[in-house]
Amino acid sequence: MSFLTALKSSAWAYPALEVLHICGIAILLGNLVLLEMRVFGRGKVLDVKALASLSLGIAAAGFALAAASGLLMFASQASELLTNRTFTLKMLLLMLAGCNAAWFHGRGSLDKLDSVARVQMVLSSLIWLGVVVCGRWIAYS
Image 1 (tube, rainbow, N blue to C red):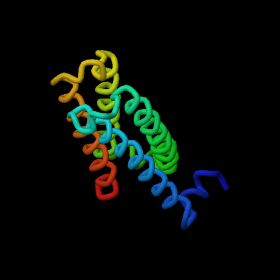
Image 2: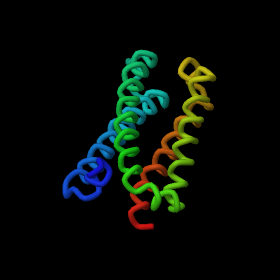
Image 3: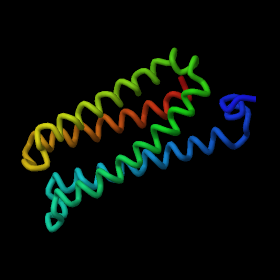
């Protein structure tokens, strides 16, 4: 029996992957919201660069956990997901989140903390909210 077949037929393996996926998302989003609050002026006693270094490192670990578990879940039902429009939208939103992050860091938004940086952070939160909504909606579409 292949690993993917075992994953699909196990009573606990796929739900365990879902739990890991949700934990990864929680770690990712929790740390992004923490940084967003600092960009919006909360916790001014905290140095933004030091906070970003800590929170973005942890967020990256959360993303890695979510991505690894998500790839395994995808591999176990690729043909169904590839025809699912909600899944496609989720993948597009993930790509958009990456582009927004690259734009944020590429323009040095942490150094500026200007209105553009705030818009980028709000945009990031909205995109990630869309990713979460799509992720839940996949099961119903």
